Length: 620
Image (cartoon, rainbow, N blue to C red; front, side):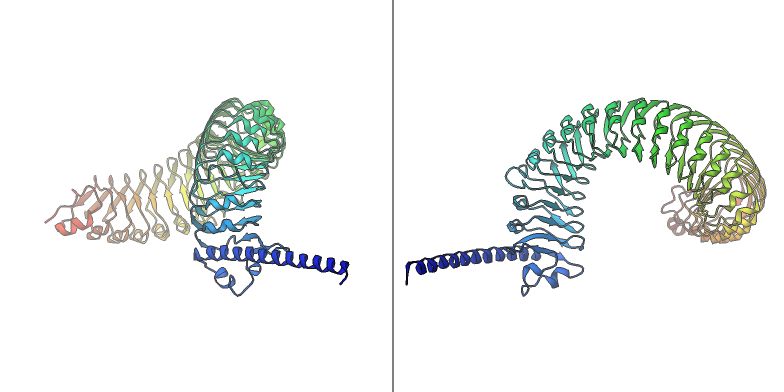
């Protein structure tokens, strides 16, 4: 054999040997991956769809298992995705032996117990998603110090994790997305987080974080979404936040932040969401707010902000949601608010606003929710409010509004809640209001409304669940058509000038839980049909001119907790069926002509087990 043949044979032998070594090594690693996954499968206590139970079979190649992806060269496991399978179990440390893993997704399951530290040693890992489970442990203090240098997405939200956010997170310098929200993390936001300059989204909300917002966060110049809401953060917002020019979403709600909202925030012209509600911010809203023309949501509610609502707010023409409630804003609402044509929800309640409700509000034809309650608005409700055909919720309660309720409200056919109570409205209720078929709750109490309750009440508004017409000047009979409101759960007609009999049709309101007709001039007998109201918990008929006996059918009201029929002309003996009132806590029968019901001690004990005062019930 010549020398060239020998060299060829030698070279071929080396290549074959290398292949055998590589094959043996690859086989060894494949077996390691398999044994790691088998260990993981053994820790699953519930697999509701039997996906892994049936599919992860030892007879099949690991790379064909559901949720597994392998690389083409070495056939190593690179992706493990068993998200949203409803699986219950724990994670063994062997999972860390999947050393080629690039993506691990256990999200939307019911895993519990600690996250094994070995997961944080997988050096190829780029995407770790453990969200929405019940994991409970702390994160390793050195989680990024030695490995995870390729990690781009870290999602451990909606778990029960605790302890501090490790400062070593700074070493995961490729991170673009971090979500630790909705856990039990405590301590400060680490200043080192400012070194994650690739970060685009950071969610740390709904934890127990305290201390200041670190000014180093301003180094995250690629940040687009920042959520620090529902924590215990205090101090002011650092003015350096103005460096985050890419920011689109900023949520700081429900903390203990204070001082003025820095002007620098109003230079973040890419912002689409700004929520600083439920804090202790004070001072005025600057005119620079008009710079935020991309805003779709602005929530300044529940702070100590004062001064006027700036005219420049009219420049925010992309706004869908505006909440400035529960502050100390004063003066008039600027007519420029009518420029916000895309607005769907407007909340200005619980301030010190005064003057008229501006006519310009009628231009907000996409509005679904309007709340201007608990202010000092005066004058009439503008008829232009009838333009708001999309409106579902209208609340003008607790102001100084007067005049008639405008007929135009009857055109708001999508209305579900109408609150006009605690004002000075007068005149009759427009008949057309009872044509609002979607109406669920109607508050008209504490006004100066008068006239009769129209028969139209029982027309098409049969979805009504809550009706309050108390503390007005309504007179005449209650129409029998009220019996058509079969969805009604609460009915307040007290403190009016109503007269005549309580209509027997009231007995058709079988979903009723609260019925108050006190302080009127009702006369005649209490209708026996009242016994049909078996859901009733509160019945107040005090201070009327009712007479006759208490019907025995009242004993069917076994859910009653409060019964007041005092200050009437009711006579006769209390019916024995009253002993059925085992839930009763308050009973008022005085100032009538009733004779006592004499019962045995055993009967009294049974009836009075939850009733605090049974002195009205003599025993034999």
